Structure formats: C-alpha cells, structure tokens
Image 1 (tube, rainbow, N blue to C red):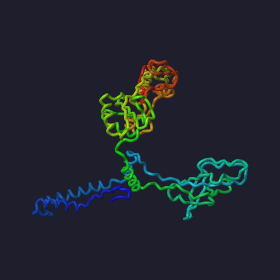
Image 2 (cartoon, one colour; image 1 turned 45 degrees about the vertical axis):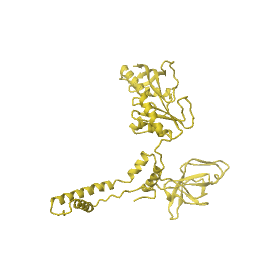
Image 3 (tube, helix red, strand yellow; image 1 turned 180 degrees about the horizontal axis):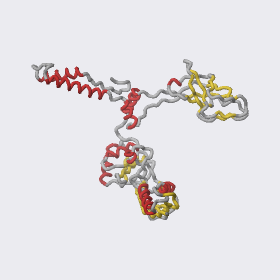
Image 4 (spheres, rainbow, N blue to C red; image 1 turned 90 degrees about the horizontal axis):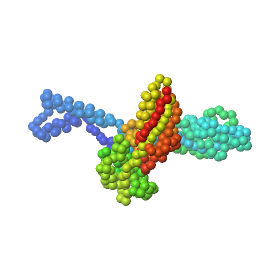
Length: 399
C-alpha cells in the first residue's frame, strides 16, 4: 500500500496455511512423487515451522509506522506538525474614559455553529489610556485556549464575544474577523507522506557548512569538526563566496594527523559541489594560565580543595571539550559537537572555581594566555577554530 506522498506500507503475508502451502509446493517441485501425509513427522515439522514463521511475521508487521516518525524527527530533523491555537483580532470597549488595563490572560468565549463555547484569551496586558473609551480597532489579539482546526472560522466581523472573566470596567468585546490558524496535530500517515516527499528532495552531497561538518565524521580519526562558512584559511579571510574552512581534532582534542587531514581533504573534495573550495586547516590550541585563591568549606583539607580546583580547571580548559554545544542533551552526541567559542570568559572561570567540591567562595582569581600578564578580563583566543587548553595553575586554598 502507498500513500499519496509515496510512503509504502509493505504488506507482509503471515497466514500459517499460506506459508505451509508454499512449503508443500517447494518440496513437490523438488520431489514430484512426494505428497504431504498428515501422519508423517516431516509434515508435523512443516506445520510447526509455518506457525512459528507466521508469528515472527506478525511481529514484523506490528512495528508501528510511528517508528519512522521518530526517525524523521530525531535523525532527519523534520519535526511533525503540532496542534496549534487559533487567533482572532478584537476591539475592546470600556464603560468610561477613566483609563484601564486589560490583564494578560483575560478570557472571553466564542460560540461555534454547534452552540459550543470556546475560550480565547489575551496574550499581553493592554492599556486603554485615560481619555479613551476603547482600544484601536482590532488591536487586541485573542488566542484560543484549546488547539485544533475546530477553532478556525469562529466568530466574524461584528461578533460580540462573551466575557468569561468578570471585569466590571469592560463593556464589550467585538471581533473584527473570523478566527484563523487553528491546526490539528499531524497524523502519522500525513507525516510519513510529508517525510517521504521531503527525503526525495534531499541531496546526498554536503551543501551547508553543517553538512560538511557531519560529513567529516565519515573519515576515520576525526572525532570533532568545525565548519566555517565563507572562511579561506589560506589568507585567513571571511565572507568568501563558495569557500568553506573545516578544522578537525581527535578524541583527545588534538589536531588530527597530517595523514588524516589529507584523507579529510580528499574526501570532502570528492563530495563538494563544482566551484566550491574546501580547505582543511588546523585549529589553534591556546594554553591558559590561572592563579587563584579560594576559601575552603569547614571540614575540607586545603590540599584536597586545591587538588579539586586544579582538576576542575583542567576539565574546563580542555581542548577535547572546549566549545561543546550545551543544547545537545545526549552525552555521546554532545561530545562530538563543536561550536565557535573564541573567548574565555572571566566570570565562567569564577563559576568553575566556586562550584568545585570543598570551595566556599572565591577570594581572588586571575588568568591569561600562557606567558602573558594575568588579569581579571575576558581572553580573546586566537585562531579561526580556537581551543583552550590547560596551562600553569598556581592555586591557594585558604582554610
């Protein structure tokens, strides 16, 4: 079976008698004189096997189509359409010109053709200044509390909505149009049809910078990669049309070897579109020195607290984890992300120290690129693909 969008539900035959007949036919073709005798062991075996095979086929048939919705949403990043609320513009009239505020969340009801009332509410406070008796025409947008297509097409020009919330200074609420925008959640069958159409239009070649970053993982030895759209590493220039620079590191956060760089360059050149220029370049790893003094919590030995702080800073200034995307929840996926992080923030340094086990608070802290003067300012990391690494830590844990 197929849907209008091209998604095919594969029909799996799972009737034991049909499977048994197929087996009889196969044996008879091989041995024409053979006939199935219901009292023979071979027939009993075939009957058992046909029944078990039908059970397995039933399990295969029972895999829900929604599994492909999960695939499309999580792997192809094509989310299903959620149910949405309807909206309608309205004009609100007050009882006098004293000046009033219509609170956010004020609810009115609009009746459908079946006589059912549906709640709509304001999304923000609306002020009617002193000297005026009403809002501008259609100035107040109402949003349905429920979601779904049934909320579309309600009301109309001049329809008077009923107040749900009792507010004595509101005289009337008049709609200036019919409600629109209400949408039912996408059915699995509808989503699969759309997913099928979408995937037929997808290119197997990388086009966007993010596509090249993902393609880099196809090369053995590449653990993280950063693709910079428009970057030409040959002259360190940006905003170049049809140029892309890509940096890669191994699982330890170190630049990949010369051979892996060559393999990556060759592979991406074979995948790129004509007239695109892809340059594989090394990231810039910058070592950071830190001097700190922290106050120990009661019961913690200073030597232990200092060791904890050094370990905490070592984990923070680690090229293997620098620039990971915190928005990615799954741990393995997050460990391979790499977003541009070309600045070491002083306040984050304080946060790292303050959150260390055994630290009560930070007395003082300074940091800098190794060899430069320590300070309490953010550090701009050099290089197009910047990574921070552990430098020299000089710490004091005060009892």
